[in-house]
Length: 440
Image (spheres, one colour):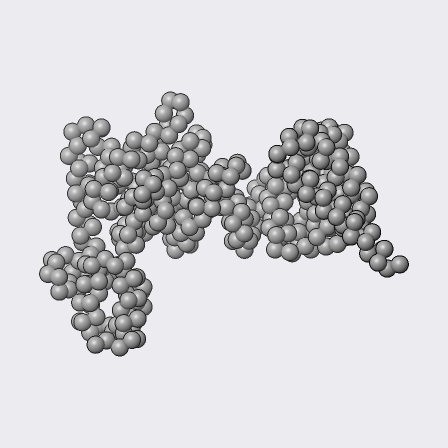
């Protein structure tokens, strides 16, 4: 009977091979050959995966006459024959799309591959994206086409997936709109590509992921970007491995996804790249450069790195005031961001001066009832509150609440937030009065 340690090692091998019977059988044959031992098989497998799974010399006790990879090579060849033998374009579409999908999926995570990735990538693409896609990679995804009404033509993709399902090269989750590949099939699909093709199709996958991300902020958009994270991480890892990936794709879009997930370090690395590239290519005063600086400052703020955030925000504000003007929405947002950084450092007077400017300008330019005006009033009330200036905080919060109730309605989230803020201020004042009474 195997010792406890051997059982643990055996279970680890079985799990790493995804419980695939033929792969486990082949692993046993390799260990039995004496070229490695049970306790170092995983190290050898990690370093020489393609050799081990492709080499027919390591056939096991099952009697199978083919190595693991050779079995899937047969499936690939059969799909390719379907493409060649198709009597017309309609019959060719399914297997052709299947081969295209099989070249792109290895650069996504092997689980949770959403159909929506391809739908959004197709529908968000513009003519520049499509031209870039073909020029960069020499490869056009037939499954990213659009109908005349601008909606995704899903049939090519679904026919391709159906072909792959028939050969068990992909699986389908119960929802029907998410797919997965067995981890070894996923490895095989990657390993069978040439070095050149790995670079090309890694670019393709990153381009699809980038184009699937929009700068919209409904709850469904947040959820989608959260589900993309594993795929973005996989594509980036594969990109770092490839020696010929020609250029970074989707840096700003990927940074957004990481930032929303609270993965600040990864967001920061990408945002620094975006900012430096914008400064070099577009110049210090370009609006996109200022936005990239503001995004990086926000990431510093979220890590509590107030000084670094402040330095960037001061630059953004000064340039915005000079280039865009004192009353431009971006200038006012920049001013509010810097005030927030001062607020977080307890620098109330500096924060107050900026927030007063923001509030007064928004009242004059946008009007008393505009949501941005109400936000700036709430921010200023918060500064008063933190200084114990309850009456001034209360006056502003009453205005915010009454306007929100009238303009947004009683049940709007912003109305409920303003109601909670006022309640907290009133409670704080009551506590202060009670403490004064107890002290006498």
